[in-house]
Image (cartoon, rainbow, N blue to C red; front, side):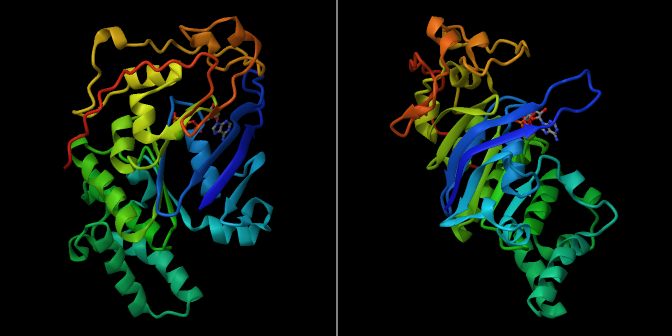
Length: 335
Ligand SMILES: Nc1ncnc2c1ncn2[C@@H]1O[C@H](COP(=O)(O)OP(=O)(O)OP(=O)(O)O)[C@@H](O)[C@H]1O
Ligand SMILES: [Mg+2]
């Protein structure tokens, strides 16, 4: 189990860039990733999703907050020990083409990390070859069909499978999938989502799933938790289906009514559509509700105190939570 508490990330101002102040990307985010479980984060662009993923994978350091692996506070460990934990978190990014070196064959791409591991574990070249075959089979690719190919010779779906295979070389405990299928041809997306789900079922690899598509979150992590993040703050969280079918927060409702959804998750009617107003990008007042400037239901209290995330498992940060159901309960189609 990974427990993250009160994660804060402040990026220093980019000097010279219109004198902009520091960016507060995360404002105290807490969540847990159960062993073999899946949790999903949804939120609009710039809400801080990637920043969380990068911190989990050790590519960014938090400004405050703690990350616990079982009973070890890894944020308190010296860097070398911390990295040993963080290596077990592998990041799968949006663009598999960018993640692979175009000048190296698939065999070489997989051999590189495995050679390092072989050296550490005193294993021979035969072991490396065997592991290459194993990780390719784990992602549903016949090794002989790709070993001597270059990334550009594969489809987007296959390329993302290779990136996942490469992540599997270190026997990860967690895969952070950051919009991992959004650049893949629509017809191949479900296959990659199914792969992520199968890796969880068969090998107990946990998933930290970042997406704009609630149907995808539901497909890979229906039994897990869904977190809705706005300006670096979780504003609603709970069991995935519960949040999707009974959203309390106006922002969640707006997101659910605006995102494109897979067949089977249709929006019931136009009267349920809640407009997601454009962000004014004004100065954030840390004492008021972050969503207040855009909220069609805001009242005086929202301009006076910030609502904190609270509830009994289905939590929300809203002074006037009202369930407005915007998404049908039908299951997405199975591939
Ligand atoms: N290296 C950085 N330096 C300065 N600001 C950054 C940096 N990385 C991210 N940010 C800022 O932090 C905020 C959160 O960014 P992040 O990339 O985590 O959002 P996101 O939710 O992943 O968005 P998207 O859906 O577009 O991928 C944004 O305001 C972004 O501009
Ligand atoms: Mg992102």
